[in-house]
Length: 278
Image 1 (cartoon, rainbow, N blue to C red):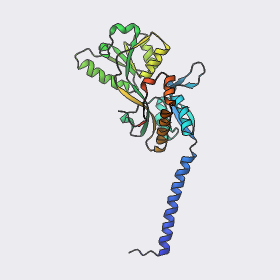
Image 2: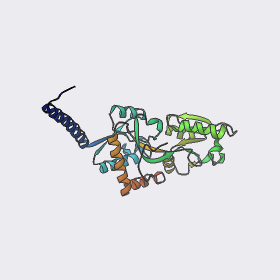
Image 3: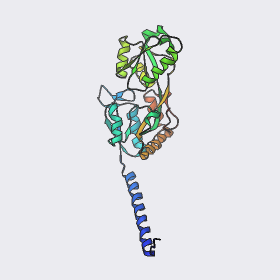
């Protein structure tokens, strides 16, 4: 049996207490020392984040929302522009604290990321106004060419929709074409290489505001999801700070004002969700 003197026991207890206090204080100091939030954005997706052609500055709903979040969280927001492909690797290596671009909260992405959901979205089919004779429902476009960006979750969703609503319904299968992105999809539609396109409703509404009397929505969204600010799975501190900050903006009306500025009121959330996407 190990026989410890009272003096030894006291010394051991003091050592444990010292380690505990040191760990606690280090954690508190780390939280207190956070004076900035590094946000990775892809500035190619209006109205969420994009370059204003007139000023070449980054603008958009997400840009305004993070400016307001910085005020609510009392931190300085630093935007780091990069490609969509670079965002996840930059998050995992700690180069950025959060992905602040329009990224969908999906279960398959939660292996190494956690999401603070801030906006409703989905897969919206639309066409050019000259194609309205083809029909007003998504099923009207069975047998036709439908495009959607190949790197987004829209692509597998449109493939699944085609199988369920065209092929299994005994209709001609649509030809689903994976495009290089939203701009490429729009160009293919304009040049009649596609009969319809599937993109996020926020982007479709932006296009319709920029080019009136050019596009028309086809039915309701094929799916519904949420955009979320993506944080590294282990970084619960930043996730919780973002959650509290966003709820402050919802409660004081700032969130709704930014939504109105960018014509996104119909996609609002009323309460912040963490990992609430499907």
